[in-house]
Length: 292
Image 1: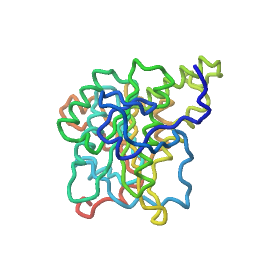
Image 2 (image 1 turned 180 degrees about the vertical axis):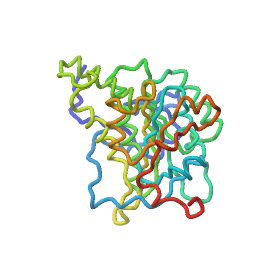
Image 3 (image 1 turned 60 degrees about the horizontal axis):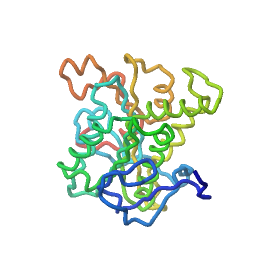
Image 4 (image 1 turned 60 degrees about the vertical axis):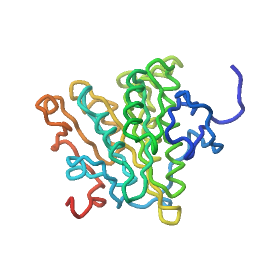
């Protein structure tokens, strides 16, 4: 182990599209070295109030239940929350697949897989490849077999790659699947470092862990290029308990949530969205007139 003498950074740019990389931006898809020479810091401050503008452009997911009832705008943070096996990842992946190049601007997608099985990530890459979705996507994978520090770092690395598009006047979508596993990895690291545990044994700054990440999703002002980064974080609940520590933290950080329920899923209603609990706090301003 030796010091590099520099702050951790990752490669960014259009050369990353179609590639699968680890939390440090190293390709793991067997496709050779990256040709991109631009590098971006993994940890940067979120844009200030002056550099932003309010969410006013729609970000179509292609799912009628979402676009009509809980609309999402460019630059919004919309949480996808539910128990395991309720279709959270399916909503996120469908959103990426539905961004196939139409007449409008390309929405570049970054998918961050945290703590998932390698086989699951491989299936996902194959599916996106067959659907030609990898042409406008970057996949960042910190699998279950990777050490906790890499699972902790992966969302920030993916965000840095998405910020390249946001800061250059383009539009990007980033999916964190899922932030519950990042919080668990952070808890492991903190307990090993003998930091005092708080509620549910999480360290006291676990709120800041997610807030500093999600605040980086923004709609930039016209003076700074009018680019956007939209975030769809995923949180897994236990037995539908949205009042647990991590779910309440992330609900309070985001601009709304899409709640999925096991009961609706098994009744055959898919996506299994509980409309009563789901809300989009800023999306109505960005909804298309036809949808209203």
